[in-house]
Length: 600
Image 1: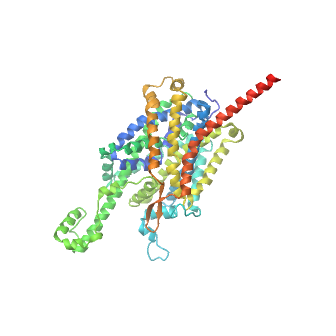
Image 2: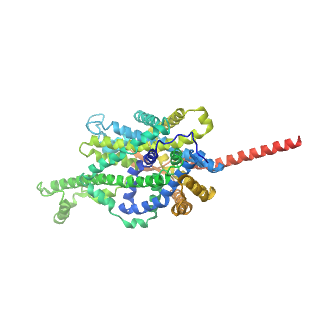
Image 3: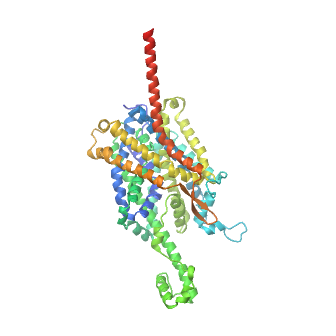
C-alpha cells in the first residue's frame, strides 16, 4: 500500500512520541504497578516485569507502529488492506476502545470532583461530617473512615448493590460533561490539535511526580515504604501468578490492541524511524512505572508509619491509664518493651485489658495492598490529609491524575475516530469536527449511566471484563496475521521500504515465535482462571458495616458480562463471514451475467 498524500500528519516526530507517551503513561502506572510490586515481592517483581517488556511489550508495540505507518489507515482499514477477511480485527479494536471511552472518562470526572473540593480550608475527606441533629458525626462515616465516606457517599452516593438503581448524581454528571467537553476541544481539529495538546499532557505529570518525589521522601516514615519496595522477596519468582501479572501489566500499560497506536502511527511520514520510537516509548513507560512506584511507596511509608505510631500512642495511653504510671515512663520507642514487662509483672491486671489492647505492626500496615480507585482516591487522599498544606498537595495530585487520564483518553477516542473517518460513506457526508463531536456526545450520553447510584458497580464490570479477554485475542490474531498470513518476509520488505534496513534477528524471533507463545499462554490462563473463578463477584458497599463486602452478580448482570466478553471478539469471525458471503454473491452475479450474455 502506498502513501496517502492527503492524509494529515504530525508536525514533527516529537509530537508522535509525546502522543504515544501521553497515551501509554496513564493511571495504571500510578495505581496498578505499585500494587503489583507490593503483591509480588517488591523489587523482585522488576525481574519478570522487565523480561516481559523485552519478550512481549516492545515487539508488539513495534509491530503496531509499523502497520499504522505502512498502511496510513486506522485499525479497520489497515487490517482490511492486509487481508479483506480481517477487517473485523480493526472493528473489534474499535468496539473495545469504545467500551473504554464510555467508562474511562468517569475517572476523570471523579478527579474533577476531588479537585474542586480541594479548595477548602479543611479538606472534606479529612474529618466526618456532623449528622442532621448536630449531636455527633454521621454514623456511616464513623463505621468507615472519612476518606472512604467521602468517596462512597459524597462522590458516588453509592447504592447497596447493583440491583438498587437510582437517579443520576448531578454533581458527577456535570463533572463528566466537563471531562467530555475538554476531550472534544483536545481533538476538535484531529491530529493538528492533538499534536499541540500532548506537549502538556505528556510532560506536566512528570513535573508533578518530581515535586511529589521531593515531598514524599522528606515525609516522616517515607524511608520505610521505599525500603519495603526495594527489598526483594525472591521466593515470589517461583509463583506463576507473578509472571502472568508482569506480562498483563506490560500488555495493558502499553495500550496494545486498542488500535490507538495504529491510528497514531498512520499520521507519521512514511520514512519516519518508528523502530527507535517504539523502544524509547516502551522504556519511558516502564521507567515511569518504577519512578511513580518510588513516589507511591514513600507515601505508603508515611501513611503506614503514621497509622503505626497512632496505634502505639493509643496503646501507650491505655497502659499509662491502666497501670497508673507517670506520663514520661512509656514512650513510643519503648512501648513494645513495656507491654512485655507489664505482662510479666502484672499478669492478671494485663489480662483484664482483653480486646482493648491493639496489635501494632508496621510490616502489616505496609503489606496492606490496594489498587485502582481504592489507591488513587482513598489511600492517597488519606495520606494527603495528614500532610502540611494538604490543599496544595491535593490540587497538585488531582491535576496530575487528570492529565494522565486525559492523555490516555486522547488515544482511546482517536482509536475510534480514525477508523470511522477512513470510511468513505462517513467522510463524504461528515466533517472531522462533526464526527468528533458526535462520538463524544454518544459516549457522554451512555457514560451518564455510570453516574447513577449503582453506576460504580457497572463501572467495575466494564473495567474487569470490557477489554481484558478481547485484547488478548485481538493481539494474538494480529501477530499471527502479520507473521503467518501476511508473511514475515513481506512484513520485512515493508519495514525495509520505510526504514532502509531489514528486520534484525531479535524482532523476527520475538514476533514469529516468543510473543505468540506467550500470548497463547496468557489467553489460556485467562480462560482457565475465569472458569475456575465460579460466579463473578463484585465489591458492594455496605453502609451498615462501613466497608465493602463481596457479592455475587445477579443473573442479568452475568449475562451482560458474557455479552461484554463476546461482543468485540465476535466482530472478527462475523466480518470474515460477511466478506466471504459478499464475495460469493459477487462471483455468482458475474457467472449469471456471463451465462445470459452467452445465451443471447
